[in-house]
Structures are given as structure tokens and as C-alpha cells.
Image (tube, rainbow, N blue to C red):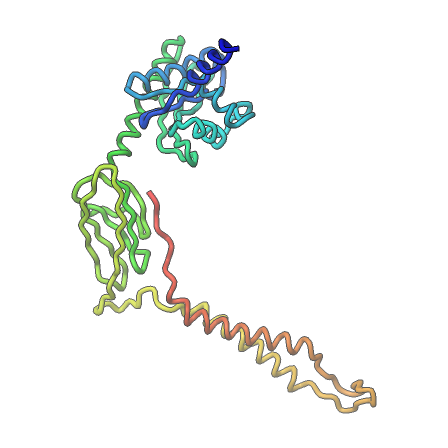
Length: 318
């Protein structure tokens, strides 16, 4: 009994080694085209070997499969990023590499790798390597090149700073070091160091801000734009056309109601109230049309009064 328990404990240790901050799990890869299962496993192992050679703790694909099945039963039968991430997160691995090997009829082979965070299954890097493969050693070399590329991509992203820029009002053109990158609200990664930001919005004075960005840091910048007194542009003021059309529609409905009431008359009425000569307007349609007219006018007035407080939300995320 003791021997059995020791064997089980050793197996669990092999499958779920403790993951460090640099730890990366490698999951079994998918395949498209004529890629033998044995070669596919060797490609995944080559990716893991290259990551380990670069100084990372690595969970091998075979161990990852067992661990994922334990944490997310049935996941590997139809692999999904979400369930693989859930299983590996339960094993305390912070990131994992998956991907696909595509082999074309002429022997051209593409190896695509994606690096994901296990918490939230967010993709943080992706790389692809493609080349002619006539023997298995070439596909393993291609896999190692893709693994190196994805680590380099990850390192570049880690060195850059995350910047979030908001202007009030939003919709301003944002320029970084003189070049336009989008409109506010804007989120993106910028190289660390001193950076100059300019914001331009028609009807407002141009604004400029200076930032000192730390490698891997994050900054949020909120800029209150000031009206340009010399500009004839009203800026993003109150809407005119929409509220005006809505108000005109409401007046038209009330006018129709008034005409119907004015032309409706009964020249002779029976004792029970029935109109014998002439035509009497139906009460319900008149009320409904009148109510629609009042609501249209009220809606147009509300739109005009409150519409100017909204800000455009056409920022770009990069």
C-alpha cells in the first residue's frame, strides 16, 4: 500500500511541477494536412525543448494533456483554448503555448504558435514560421525557430509600456512623437523613455503632454481640452437635425389630429348616441395620434437639451 502511494505521489509531481514566473506549459499541437501523429508530438516536444533551453520552466505536452484532462475532463477530446487554460490555471501555470502545424501537398509546412495567459485565456503573442520540409529534422528546426520567435515577441511586449489616453471631450486625434496613431480614447503600447503626445480636436486648442515611460509600466493620461476662442467651429455641441426632424414629425401628427377633429361633425344624432348624418371621429385613434405627436415633440426637445453632453466613442485600440 505504501509503495502504491509513493508511486502515485511521484506521478503527480512529474505531471504538475511547480511553475515559476517564467514557466510555460506546452500543449499538444493541432494539425492540418498530412502530418503523422508521431511527428506532431515531436514538433511539440521540440518547442518545449527550445523554451527550456532559453531558461524557462516547461511543462511537456504529454504532462500538459494529463493535467488538463484532470482539471477539465473531456477538454482534450475537442481541445479549446478556454478549457485548456482552465486546466493549466488550476495547475498554477501562468501561460501556455499552443498552435497548429499545416502541411501543404507540395511539402511546404507552416508552424503557428500562440502564447496565452491561463487566467482569462488571453493571447499575448503569436508567431509563424514556414518553409519546405522534406525530412523530419527540418520540421523540428522550424518548430524551434517558431519557439524562439514567440519568446522574442513576448520580450518586446514586456519592454514596452501600456498607455491609455482619454480626452474630454473624446474624439481628438492623438499624435505620438509627431505621428498620428488614432483617436481618443486610445490604448496602446509605446517604447519606454521620454514621449511627447499631442491632441487635436476641431474647435479646441491643441494640447501637448510629456510622459516618462518605464519599461513594462502602465500610464493613464486624462486631458481636459479647452475651447479655442478664435475658432468658428462649435465643436461637438448640441445636435440640431435629429431633434428638429423629430419635432416636425410631432407637429405633423398634432396637425393631422386637429384636421380630423375640425372636420368631424354629426348633423343628426340618434337617442342612443349613434350618428345618423355626418361622421364622428373615433376617440381612440385621435388620442393615440395626439399622444404620439406630443411624445415626438418632447423627445426632440429632450434630445436637443441632453444630446450635447455625450462624447464620441470612436477611439482606436492598438
